Length: 240
Image 1 (cartoon, rainbow, N blue to C red):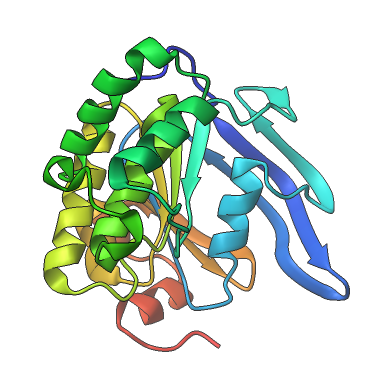
Image 2: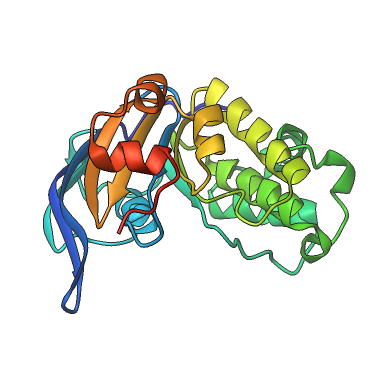
């Protein structure tokens, strides 16, 4: 499963987003490039979720420009997002995936094979007939990943996909994320968990108060943070 075309790179050029008098994203410039997962870290309220929504195209910036592979206002046909608390449809696990395939315009003749492929990918093949709302939290996150992959996106945005999950469920979700990334889909993920960022990231973006404080390959970021904010955050201190 790999998109034939890509929305990458995604470029933010001096992007600001305001809601009423509150600045949520502040004059942010960044490029999301092909490659291993890009992981967004930062304290609550730093702008991670809003960044993902802007990159997905769910929000227009107040000022500045966002481009997808050089195009303005590109339709989100080659990108997908999984929210922190995905909503399960009132149907079976298999039915949820089939609904996503229909919404993505996949030919009906392919639904059976694609459904089986996606459920196997996320480790839910044995639960295909179970009502989706009876799944555990971790299983629901994996089903949400399967649904997001229905359109074979080139970029997949994940908003804190393991928040509130126990260690076993977290590992199961992280294993799926690694598999998706290995298949060529660009992962852009927000997390509050520095351990998870160390395990999954190819590169790190530290956000604070809607600004990019530091960005670097993950190994270098954690070993040699360059800014005082990054050093404090890696050390477990609060950023105020």
